[in-house]
Length: 226
Image 1 (tube, rainbow, N blue to C red):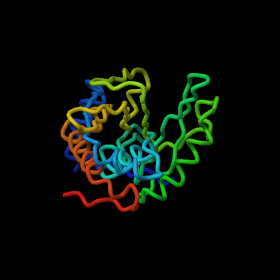
Image 2: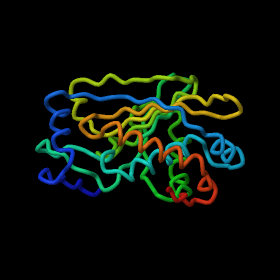
Image 3: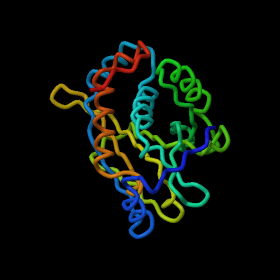
Image 4: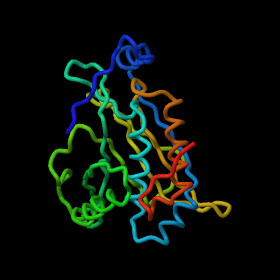
């Protein structure tokens, strides 16, 4: 695992924002959006690849483009950025009505990522441990899925040592068909010290572009964004 790179506080444009939302007014915010996944869902119906893994890869690709979503704290409590972050994602055990958290190394090639992540879902679908692979690496961010319900708002309430958690958290909901279009609810939980509304909006816009042009589902090639 590569070490995080410390941020130069003397030249960082968000230094004052970080210090304000880290120490003076620590807070997180959540943003719930609906993605138009009509083309994405159609591509996956024609494919043998798994929808959940494709969703995770698309989120991971958008996340890894931007330093504000790869942030962590050094041992001294200063901000730093991981070179790459990997998705940790939930696997539901229907017999126990519990879930496990597993992780897979991010790969910019969707096909390569799918080949690693799909066996993990199969292997741990009846896991009884919360972390069946052992403790995840430090450079992960969380993705969970609620395929049983669609939603227009979802909020995680973080307290205690959670204020040190700078990684984003994503929650996916159930598809809904509206006016002939397929929409996917997505909640994004962000630490305000790490990112502002502009950064989260840009992330969502890029994610929408990825699912609107899903050639990568079968070809393993990421579309070029404007």
